[in-house]
Image (cartoon, rainbow, N blue to C red; front, top):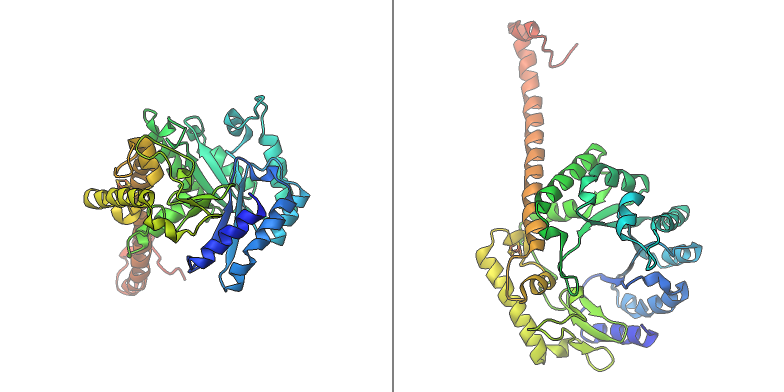
Length: 372
Ligand code: SF4
């Protein structure tokens, strides 16, 4: 992406007054660190006009970690770039899938990159892609991320999306095993007092406890804007840009070099996409009891799995919303129950102490609420 394309993107955001709160800029690509630190230095500073408007800009970048060196760590520190590393756990899991074009393993190189981050005190989040194989190893995966000191962890499952036509989610028994895996991760996280934040748990807990209902940025236009290297852009889910399906040959709504974002609302393509996405959300609203914690799902999953944005349920939502929502409801109820029991115990204790003065039954049972 040229500096001019970054400048044009920033100008369009400001002209259309789309920024009401912090702007999160996520540098995402096949592997963003194949470009040198100076590439980012020249582009990140182009967001200064937005900060001069009083709007905070947060930069983030997702990498496989292989190319992280001292120079990149200095860049991350200089611009406070939040770093996400894609690593699937210990080598025996990671190296089954993450190999070079010639088939060589990459775990050792990723670990070297993580070590560099630690040397420079740059904290990082991790994305761990789960497969049928890795579901067998929740303890090994948890301990790996705890030991490399990941600040937060997110689990992705390969999905039906774009050119990727199959998913682990559709494997027989996968859903039950995914839940068993997550429940074990939950136990380990709780056992360690929440040492690592797990996106799936934190995000779902926040959705459940939020009484206002879900505002879904994936189904609302202009919450997320994805700009391609040539300036083409789309909105809703990032995965839509560049994809095509029989009913949706293109999701490209414009180009930052030739027009503004909001002007695209007048186009037939925007009206078709938005109309179908809204119809899909409405259908979810009327048929799904999980709507309040979901907000109508992910358009990219809907079109990839069902061929239309107007649809409702997907494998992705069965596992990531419905199953996870049920699991987290159980855990939240367990917590409330444990807290209530503790409170009951606390209010019972003084009474028992009083009882001790007039009855010897507690003493006989060996019970001493307040041992003297
Ligand atoms: S969980 Fe699935 S079916 Fe329910 S609202 Fe979300 S996307 Fe729609």
